Length: 449
Figure (cartoon, rainbow, N blue to C red):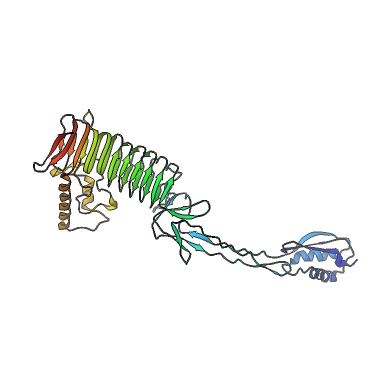
């Protein structure tokens, strides 16, 4: 038996490993064992990735006639590195984040970026093309080419377009969404089926938004267009560029508010500030709240605090038999008479308790401070300030010709009726009354409905 026959070599199916063992048989001279082993490797075409220590061990075993050696790996190739498929590298991460970093370095757990608001023309991401990968080699020294990288189709919806450079752009304002199949889209209306709480984080979108559940204390919801909340707003901050509908009630707690760029409808309100650039409607009653809108309608009782409208106020009942404070004001422009127009489209009146000013107008302490100096506005000259106040007063005079306050139930004694002239304080309960301004006499008129 030739000693070379004692050497058993097998190569793995993928050619990346070669194994060898020694069986019993005649020994080879020490000086010849390495040469015999080299011939056997050449017969098996094992030429690359050799393990010199493993081969030296085989040579020593071959020099002993009764020595057997179990299989050991004597050569390894290198597997090819496959190419990576093309993918979209988003400018902002997808999915819920643990929070957002504040300027002071702390983590805001309410800002989890479940929704990502985008404006039309804003870049969403970049398509990273597929890479070719790197070839490998087997124990025979032959090259192994990598599998060709698949050029994955980039799925986009109607709200996204891809240019020739592979950049993704939003074709409309709204919310970025990524569906289960990986489709990237920008939708102008998003439906959030869960409550708005710490699990979801605050919600913000450039499009319209519908929330199917409640908005919990301390949270905020912002929409660039219309917003509908099917549940309760409880101590949250709500803002929309369009109209807002809250199917449940709105409770203020600490810091709760609702601001609508269009109409606003709420089932009932308690201890909260409600603002609307259009019509504000409370289906039931209001208690210890502040209402500001162009028109205001309350289906139930307005109990304590105040409301302010430009043209028309309609209430069922106002005030309480105990004579609690209740201010009803109309013919008052939403824009303040200060040196600068309000920023963000909302009225500059921020105090929860107005105070009397001469000529029947009302100003707030905070409002006067804001009028004197706004950090985001250019300072005006004295002449410009005077002209701004004159323009505001002209607007009020126009509103006084059409403004009315209607009580379809009872207005209790102590209610204050302010239409931009000397206010009327009710000394006794009145029912089914309309209040308007007699400009010639400069007083409030009272009419039966």
